[in-house]
Amino acid sequence: MLKIILIALLPLLVILTQGFEKSTTQPPKDRQERSSGTMEKMIVANGSASIDLDVVRLSGTANRSAKAKKLQFEAQRDSFFTIIVFDKELRGPLPSGMPLIPQAAAPDLPEKLSASYGKLVIENLPYGGNYNMAVRDSDTGFVFFNVEGYETEYEAEHRSLNIRNGRLLVSPEFAEALGRSADVGTAVGQLNVTATMRPIEVIEVVDGEVKSAVLPPSSAPNAGTTPGPDVIVGDLSALAQFGSSAGTQVGLAVATDSCNLGIEPLNWFALPANDHPVIPQNLYRMSVGSSND
Image 1 (cartoon, one colour):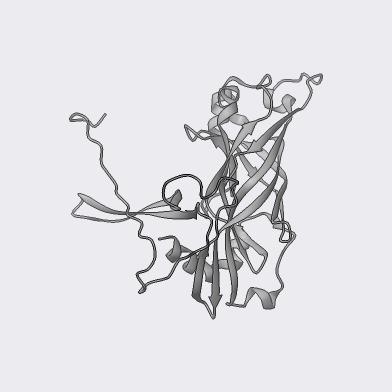
Image 2 (cartoon, helix red, strand yellow):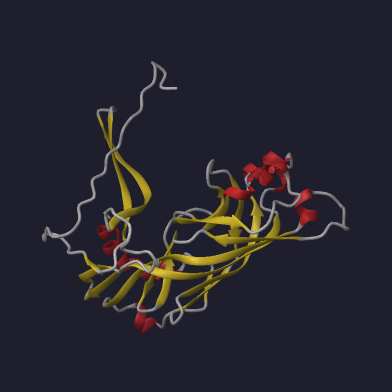
């Protein structure tokens, strides 16, 4: 599934670049039109994030003595906050998320946000929506802020990704929880992210066709020392439903991100070759009582 998705992404590399509001690594036109090169799918190896909150606007009061709050987080290591890099140039994000680990106790925040303080995630949203990024509760999916206006930089030599000056806009559900529906879309802060990325898949493309795909070995200090499979499914995303049959059946599919936990590169051969891992997918309908509740 992942291989099919990545091949399909190739003609959309220029479109993917628009997934970030602004990039300082815009490729020249002749490079954009090339269909041969090295495509890397990258996740966050490590990183940090900061959220600067305008307490006055967030509280909805005129208390000008209130000070802005700077919330500091560490990015969860090996987060599937995923980007596509083509010939060392950033082409855009894929729907994915980066869990945030607070670096200090929760400050005085609105009750709803305070309850989710240790469970926040920065999410790259699916394409086609009003926003490309959001900050939400990782458990419930509750959206606190939509993010707009951010700038992105990717520095290939150090594989560093920077997201700067993202405006935090109060989401409709957070405005409702605050009891201030009129504050939907109000800018109440700024988001900044600095991350070191690492490739989980490297694909060589020649004239639009995949010639080879390699899953690089893990860079973890204890790689190869833990019993178990080297090749795993690290993440599931993009669950989609396709059509129906007589109103009783539907087709479902989900994308998979494969990872190599071993110490040797893994060659992933495309069909019709059969010398590559197989990823079974099983979906179950849970039924408890006549009302399925």
